[in-house]
Image (cartoon, rainbow, N blue to C red):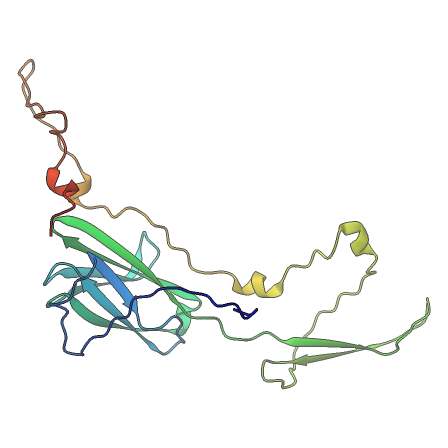
Length: 234
């Protein structure tokens, strides 16, 4: 780190041939893997879709908020792996979300990834030069303000200047001016992790005539589906 201390971590590398469909590989029920941590508008995000079950159909929701999506792509995977290319636009800054949904052994699984597009560096450096080092009470003086862009070039534009007595900060407990970087650039698109609604979410009940016996569960745990809790199933 910045203090010279060594840090340890772990990661998983995916090495694959362009023509490899992943049939001989072992994956989690559903995986979304991005090729980069950050992108710029105009670039293409290469997303690797991996599934545990062969020849799956994956619904890929692009620019989703969890409740709605700008685009939905049905992806037919031959084998267990397929690469999908997403064109990133200027409006995607500072981030978008993608969500994938598929069926694995009769279970609905979902994965979400955030694609980060850092905002452009449009902050100015401000330098204030006093006309005099010392000014007496009631004496007039002037200020020179230099504005430069991220490349160090002079910036031409409108500037708002506020002048106040710094001793007021002692009464107020410090400056009440927020960090402009956080105020303008800390906003990101949210993702609301809503539950995926599907036919398995609904439960039915028995229909019987009045006073007729109804079917009962067999045993103490007869109402549970054993296959769902079988950790040894493939």
